[in-house]
Length: 338
Image (cartoon, rainbow, N blue to C red; front, side, top):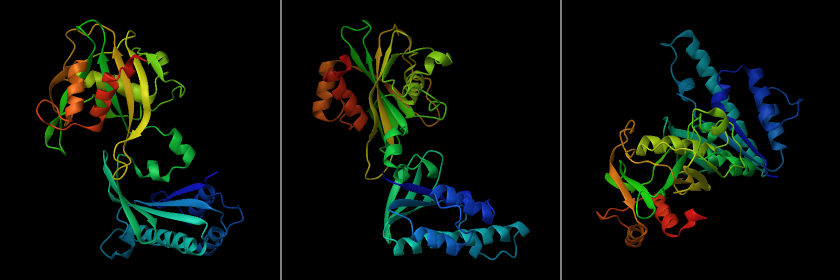
């Protein structure tokens, strides 16, 4: 079984020396008799078997220890000293990995960190680096996960494949919107989508792949939805005005897909939502939040969806996202009926 160990150096900053080594022993599964000093850590690392070790270094002001502390508060010199010692620990990992070929060491540093997107430098070999744009905080990065953790992780966001099949129209319709996507500078034909938040990720039945929608306020009935399904209920309400009911069907099409894994570890779940309830008068984009900007809906027939899919652009000649392409293919292929 693959052994993967991850050490977040920022967690060491507030610890004293003994606590630091206690944490390292726990994280690396080192023997209790391992000493609490750099030499003992080096010896233990050089004796480790085959494994991956991820060192995450996203400490704030990580050059603090090398600065002149004369104009700072008394505590700042202590902080600088602690940063300097943590740098020595980091160097021990680097030196040990050079001597021990069984250690596959990755050094991950934060170039830019924010709530919604961050940029990390992934040092996958000595002298070799790869930039990764991510939605994730340092401790949740995909590249630090073991195979088992990878297979069970929750995606960053959900994309909803919404089909209205309630008799309101002469045939079922694929519901899309025109949403302004700032990096493209255009209104793109889009599916309802959004990030999965902490509340969505609360306990759920991992074996649930489809269900009828229930009132989100009812915790007992809502708990059998996956995090992606929960997020779908919320995003559809916000972006389309539709409140799902127990007549509507939510189904997981794909639990997690990567759109551009050469640049980012961002992932989406694909969720199919079949609207069977009466939604007349509900369609609205008034629930847009923050920077969200919409310019109307498109209710596509199968013939129109096939035309847009074949042309590769919408009626305005504008390209669309990979998730819109998936929605079009899912709809015209009748996979949603299965």
